[in-house]
Length: 251
Image (cartoon, rainbow, N blue to C red; front, side, top):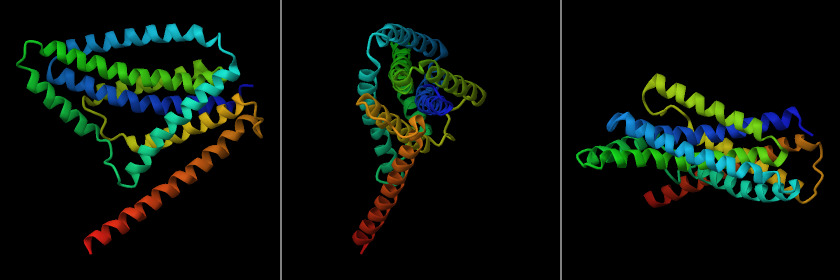
């Protein structure tokens, strides 16, 4: 049964996850357009969107042939693995073990790389390929996020709407600013998305195995809360370990 909780959580997870991926793709497209020209940037982006559209149309009909329990179990397992990967990186970044992702630095690196290629006769082709790869790779992740958050409960439409809103929002903000979205708290978003995807994954694995969750979709809230507490404890423990280890080395 579809509830406000399931619709809201599905759209939120899809929106946030897609927003992060689209920001990363937009950074590369912007670098290509500013450094080389907008023509290869648009061509590469258009070709990638075409490939993604074919992928979506190919996968869509197949979903209706799979029993819902099997779909929930398979997608839930993939979602747990995918979400925990995001959450692990977010925890390590928040605790200082790995550097925070910097869109400004990524933009500068890509721009410098494209400038070095600007004298090459293949510069337009290389620039177009850079835009194509960025949109295709990040787009595949967006497609996976939409399928993973929406397919388990037949909410593909709502998940797609969340992703579409994220795409439009990033494009509008980017066109207005004409620069990479460095102000976006990407690690914080990945932290939340990691929690949401892991929550969905655990919930759907349980449903796929035939478990009866207390309160049905409302069980998503305590699952999310438990994972959030664990994540914040892990960040604090790792920060303490890192601080203690640094003091020992200094002494």
